[in-house]
Length: 310
View 1 (tube, helix red, strand yellow):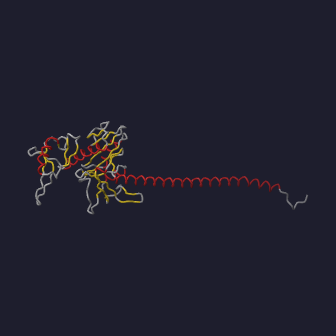
View 2 (tube, one colour):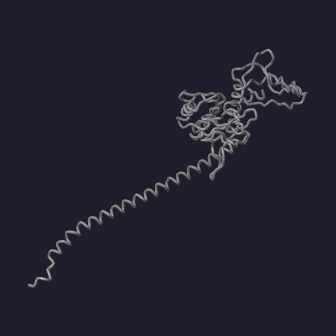
View 3 (cartoon, one colour):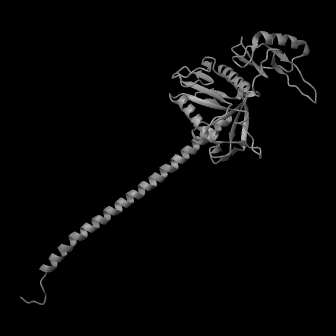
């Protein structure tokens, strides 16, 4: 394991110090046993540090590990999920020390238990969900609706492993129905790599307004890795520079579409008024014709015949 949690420092995520000098390694192992715990919440097996390098034929990555004999081995997916939650909670606290940040706190109505909840001073909640296991678009719509029903913000961070992070044969990032549904709903997803402590933003191409989210695409050919330190936590959720560009471009696109729609409506209204005015003019001419006909006939009847002498 590359990360563990320091219980005496607000559950701060601790990265394994692979470059520790040999004379300091024993001291760190003792420190790990006394102060650090596994990122898996229900795991209380003691930890130690393994400053191993292995051989060229069998390389071994340095990292935290449980003491031998404890029998604790964790699935990579669960380990990454728990690591991500701990990292996000610590990051949120560092962003806003005055706000309340809680792990796996139930929503007020008790319908959901998001991974991380950030409670603002105004009472507004930002929910952060980390999704490593498979999730259908329909399931996501239900969960997202439950989380945002009272006006709260829900942010979705997809895991950096399969099934959510897959490369196509051409090397692009595969996009499925789940991501398309999220983008169409305005909840543009991000991907999270807790090992590298980076957030990934993906898009398909740029148009006249800027980058385009993968709403109707099956793959994203552009993405960027942003260190968590360069991301911000706002009322609207986790924000990366690339996500800000995507949202600004989407706003410009909506404004342009609204302007075009308004122009079309104005043109249609103008044509409707012209047609109405033309109809009124025709009806007026028709009425004048009806009135003029009998009057001209009466005048003709009273006009004297010049061939008749008095």
